[in-house]
Length: 142
Image (cartoon, rainbow, N blue to C red; front, side):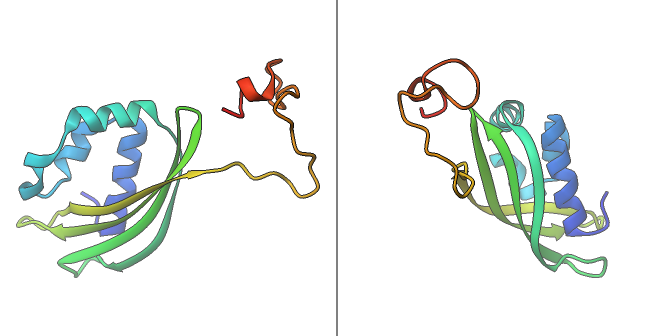
């Protein structure tokens, strides 16, 4: 098992990118496993195209600690939208000394694509800049 709470957080992110829901379940604290919806987690992992993980901060969670907190942002694409999943996760060591995920306070934000400065605005009836050949209003403007 990972030696720190942050390392466990990173390994859980990797498990989501690979669809390894068994690992996600195995790294839950024992008192949290009853509430885990493996089917929902598997569906989310499969629908998402995982883009990046950014650790924002950590508190405790080191080799000598009993608990820890990791704040992170996981970015992914789902249904054509880029989403930032912000979470503050709580971890604690179990009786055998392994780090376990306890709970997470989450927030997801859809990221709007940014237009470069000075770029012309695309009209609704103009061809879509993605190159699909469709009108912008029937393609990426949806």
